[in-house]
Length: 431
Image (cartoon, rainbow, N blue to C red; front, side):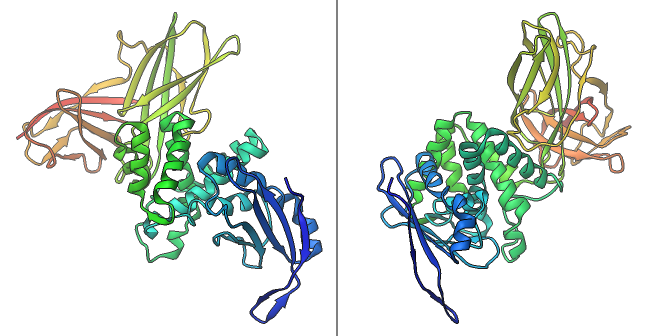
């Protein structure tokens, strides 16, 4: 690597010029040319103060290039120009920053790929710029700081999003600048959605290949969320509309309340999902990791699909379980639920959930089905005889009715689930 060089220069601007110091270092990405990184800093004192952070930039460029494709402007340069603007602004090939910190430099640099090489086609999709730039902070911390530092960053991002139960990554009002650049939703929840896409693929080779495909396909152009979705669908080998409905257009997050038991060499699990914005997103269909800890302090991680309100599982194990933890690596945005051992839980013998019969009328019904004796807010799930879900709707004791107008005529099964794991069942006919 060529040694950094330092010169003095005059940068002209409004009101004249300033005697900036030009400090250049170099990145050497695999498969690309040596890239000069030209830094214009206020003076020698500023350079002395920030040089350690500035010197992280070559490694950041080399790492990003290996993950998502060669730095898009490798034939020219990269650089920084200091200015008192409050934070940073990712101008193509020359980012303006008011100073240098690990995450600020990593964030603005990743914009050269996500924002400057491929730009969002609408303010509605600004997360394609800011969510990815924020995720660049995580990638850099994980590579150059430590796994605990990256996890601490992720914890902070999750806590930010969970401060409020509502809000979509999609920007519904593109005339509202504050909403467009919402730190909680555009930056932080956007980054979390990217992390969940990585979890969904469950294969880092596929995940980063998807990002490289996105970059090469839309290089020098604009892209929308649907374009990113199609790239990830190709890697996943399945439609992902459900995921983007939940996490991009939808609002809120799930919470998993878990009951478990072990008899002999069989582990039983019953997970009840509740959501923070049931009127907008009544259910999140997702895989969930469960960490089992055994009496000998060894562990095992199970990845199980939460495909319905109350999901139940029985899994063979060879050791005695002492505890379980839900989503230990925080792959999924989810609230703090309960984990309880229930010695009565034995699937295939007694029910996985406390079940009651629900009286409904009129039956058959035309538009509205009344739920008699409903005593708690619950999530209703309507399925046909094959188990296919046709309707999910939150119901409340103050208005214990189910709107069935979206259902075709036929026989249906109704399941109500409350946050405490109580399940009520009924059958009804829609005429």
